Structures are given as C-alpha cells and as structure tokens.
Image (cartoon, rainbow, N blue to C red; front, side, top):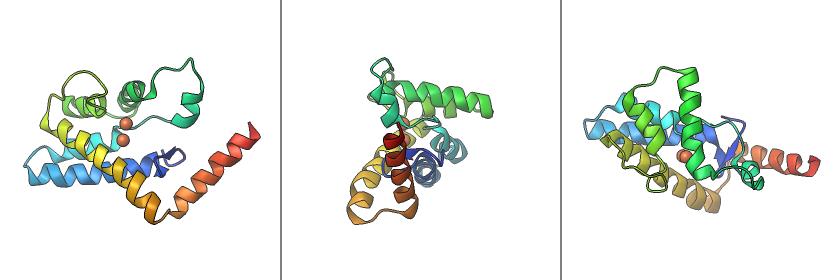
Length: 146
Ligand SMILES: [Fe+2]
Ligand SMILES: [Fe+2]
C-alpha cells in the first residue's frame, strides 16, 4: 500500500489517517473501536494506481469497484468480522448503493471523506511530504517510460 500514490500521499498513509480518526471517534462514541480502526485500515486495500486504472476505458468504475477489491484482499489476508466487511463495502456511500449497517461504518465513511478533503486541500496547499514527492516523481517516471 505504501507504493501506490493516493490523493497526495500513499494508500497506506491515507488508510492510517482514516483508521486513527475512526478509532478516536468510535472510542468517544463507545462503539467498537477495534473494528472501526481495522476497517479504516483496510477500506482502501487495493493494490493498483487508480489513475492508471482509469485510463483503460474497459475497466469498471473505480469508485464503485475498489471496495469489492479491498474486501476480497482483506478476506485473503485477514479474518474480518461483519462490521469490518460492512465498513469496507460501504465506505464510498452514497456512491455505492445500500446504507451502512453499523454506526462504525458511518464513522469510517465520514473519516474517509474528512481525511480525503484534508489530503487534497490542506496538505496540497500547505506542504507536501517527502514520501508524496517521491511517489509523484515515480509516477511521472512510469508515465514517461510507458
Ligand atoms: Fe475508497
Ligand atoms: Fe479512502
């Protein structure tokens, strides 16, 4: 996950932010903060650069498709409970159909949007991390090589 550029950093950096924020909110609200944190970590567990993925017109809509990929990868690598499954599948709500079944899913859905806005707006306006620069440089190099 650390190798794939996402928003303005990597998928891993984004997932860690979503996970930590979800953990804090779930703990404050006396929800299942372990499932909230784990679901936040796994919600974008897809291992491809979505910008490259979108260039192929035959590929499915990434926004709708990647929660299913993340769920499949999560099942392959870990034992996940019903709450974590729902978090992963519904984190793109309202883009994906079906309401979140658990409050933890609502929390991660919110945390994902908050972190995404933060990553796109605040971080890109104020500073860029060294990792972000490295990943962007690598993506540019890949495009030139292709
Ligand atoms: Fe996502
Ligand atoms: Fe996300």
